[in-house]
Length: 266
Image (cartoon, rainbow, N blue to C red; front, top):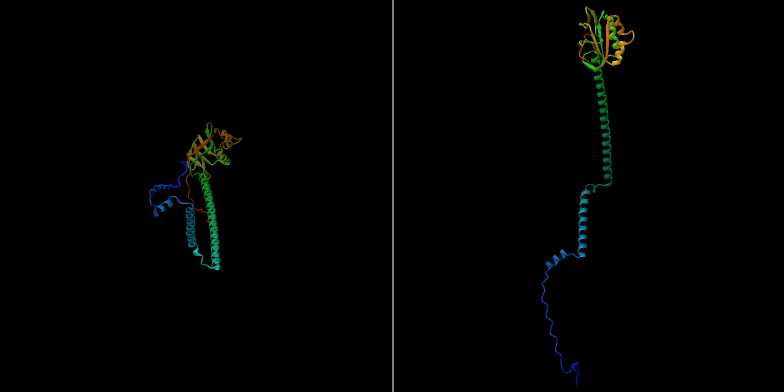
């Protein structure tokens, strides 16, 4: 009895049924391939793009450099040397002109400084002279000397010595009774009941205001055998006060010169 597991040699086997055909996919066009390459470039495409960009940049740079240097590219060596020599000479002349102008500016500053110093000095001298001449009101520290006549009369010599003592110790301005400014040209005459000072009558008590160092002015009146002793000998009394501020409003009239003129050569 034959084995059912063994194939029968007289039986021809039937062929296997054919596999089902795959469904047709979508067709890929050249445009699709280009889009896919742009959206997902391969490494080779990236390298190629970078090389093309570098080549383009080098070409543009070379064109710009060539366009810039064409001014001197056609010059010969001697012409370039002459050109550089001319530029060097121009620079030297410019530097020399700058140095000259700086020197002129320095001289002008010096002249301006000297001129301003001279003007300041002249203004100071004018102020000093106008004060000494009694042409302007003044104020400053000083002393006030009040002289009264109790049992006698103050002599002309005593009044002159008192004023001269104040001048000797540096009184810069002196006024009597607030109305008469005493200067170098002041004249004092004795008159009935007082003195005539520059034509103006003053009577006791005599108040002498002086501007200067207060303690020095006071000492010039009170020292032994000084004006105070003379005033007391004349039968008067004297009171000396040192003040921080003395105001002198009295001024003298300016006399126009008739004969004397400043020397133009000085």
